Picture (cartoon, rainbow, N blue to C red):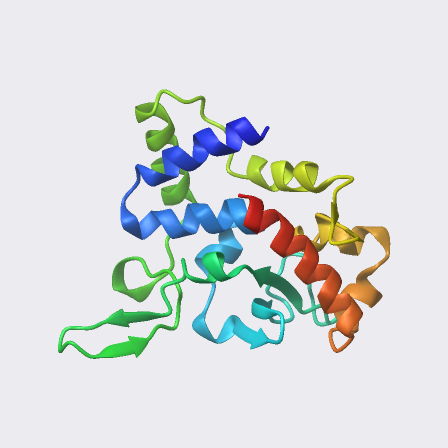
Length: 195
């Protein structure tokens, strides 16, 4: 599995610069492509653990106004460095973007476009085409039964699957808890640092 990840990372290096960060973020966080393509600058926050993506209520596929889930994903320093937080405009000044990744006319790229680019890159590298969603499963599998600095690494805390085990109350509503943030940080840091 890690061999596959390394090979597909090389495929990503072959695509245009605009798309590299999107595909790398997909591998490093396990986010759904639609979530990545619609990320906004104001969703990035910092605390004592580092940078986080904070998806507001009704953004993550399992969040709605009834359950009030605000999903968060830790970003390793190198992962954070991939994000285009500022972009030059015509007069040479820099403005914050509304979207982190802007397509034509400041609109999000479409998932179909990203799949087409991905498939073409795989074909050109003579690599089997795999669904981009497979990287999410690789992430969870690679964290299984791993320990980092004495703590169990839970891949579900990276991808957002933790709600299915009835831990939503702990992991989504207790964001002020240092223990909850620590567990999410450990999982995200362990995986992203290894990749």
